[in-house]
Amino acid sequence: MSAPPSRTRAQVLAPSPASEPVPASPTPSVPADGGSGTTRTYEKRPFLLDFFPLETAKDTRLSRFFDRLREGHLSTTRCAKDGELLWPPRTACPKCHGEALEWVDLPETGRIYAFSAVLAGAPLGMEDQVPFAVGLVDLEGVPLRLFGRIEGRPWNQLSVGQTVRVESFDIGDGRFFYRFRAPT
Amino acid sequence: MSARGVALVGGTTIPWGVRSATWPELAQEIGAALFRAVPELRTEDVDSLFLGAAEPERFAFQSHVAPLAAEQMGLRPTRILQRTELACASGQSAIRSAYAAIAAGLSDVAVAVGIEKMNLPSMAEANTAMGCALDRPWDGPHGATAPPFFAMVAQRHMLEYGTTEEQMAAVSEKNHRFANTNPHAHFHEKKFPRDKLLRLPMVAPPLRLGDCSSMTDGAAAVVLAGEEFVRRYTDTPVWVRGTGQYSDFHNLANAGSLTDWVGLKHASREALGRAKIAPKDLDFAEVHDCFTISEIIEYESIGLCPPGEGGKFATDGRAEIGGDLVVNPRGGLLGCGHPLGATGIGQAVEVYQQCAHRVPAERQVPDPEWALVHNLSGSANVHSVMVYQGGGTA
Ligand SMILES: [Zn+2]
Image (cartoon, rainbow over all chains, first blue to last red; front, side, top):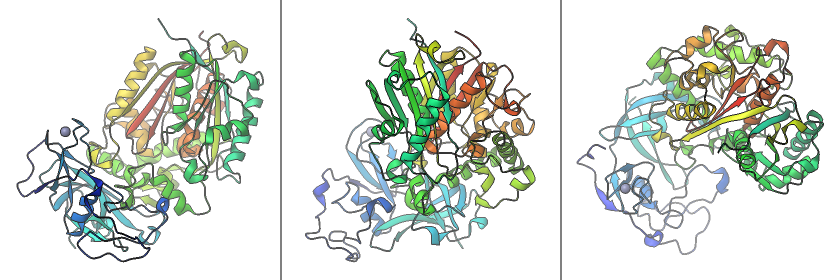
């Protein structure tokens, strides 16, 4: 793979799921704490009807990814041994099977490789967002082509090769996710 | 040492479509239909049952479905009872597993059945289930389902090779026309001429409604037997001569080229190589036309035409009766519908019936001997291929 961009920052991936304190007494519908990522919890939805991942250290060893999203940065894991940049973020390298992974921030811009739009047939909870655009975006300077929602312009005003920005957003219940935004 | 010979010795489908029937009722219906279609088959002959079912947990709120299917079909397997799940290729996986078990001597007579109930009161809930076949926590939250992914495949194929909407419509028109000869097809009665297809609404641009296979309820079953048992059931066995499968990614970020289906090249080369034949030897093929663009790329990846010429292959009529080979005479997923776990079995039923000259004349392949069956699954990240030989060979 090519050398990672100089502005990436690496942090050792916490090996233990207990590295982030678990809320002492989780209660439904408590809003996010807004930044520290240490005590937040979110509205409990039926898990099997909810596309968005559970984000806290209680639920995932990748909570650092979501904490970083709250700070406005898209990140992923890289294998410390062979330098493989991995997407989605992982806890073990698929190449060398080592578990020493480190976090790196990803570039904040990319170019559209392909796109389409959902005009019908949206999953539960997304029906009122139709039509929405999605695409595969080649991130600037790293060998990663990520799939994601593209906001900012109607689908029929997008084009292959166009530059888009990565952004994080609050999905509405205190959890964060990422998407792309085309310049208006 | 060559493995024990294994053949399809019979099979059938039930009517596919939006069925006013539950999952267990579809299982009972296919059980009854199978014993009518293969009258020599006795319940006690069937030592193993392989069930292709993609998402009964989400579509029918039921897991542990293999014994449920056995009970509904009136079967009591004594050797192997197993469900296979490989999303859209779950049915072919059931056949491959039955083949492997019989070839290894662990089973003598096995049923491979595929059952899927997909139409729910809430289509949004059904669409949610479909999204789970992709990388749910990473691609799902963006709204990823099959249509927008294959739309991007189509966009890239158009960009790289100049493939057109008209060429995609030619695939859809062909498969719907064949489905008009198949009373069990979801779209048996509907006519889809090319000009009508090009006016249907967009689902995920550039894919229109007629470019996409549908949410369909259905079931299909085949009987497979070891070589010493074959003649009990049929004079027209169809032998499994080769299989191949390849998987190279799951998350959409790791797809690489959207238009070069490396996995299908590997899987078809493996299956054809085991059968010791070349693509030009095929008389017909049942390929996975979940979307029109899929069939176009499948022509190219199986080696029926060079890369980029799949669209022209369709408009030149080379996949029609009288062309190079007949592709999807059953009506394809576009015409028959795509009840995930039943699709691969429905294709095998067509192979058996074609070789037994038991299909309507309008879709009968002349003197069929060699057939290829292909299923992709998910985002074309897995390709599964089987090669069959009929035509009265021992
Ligand atoms: Zn590694």
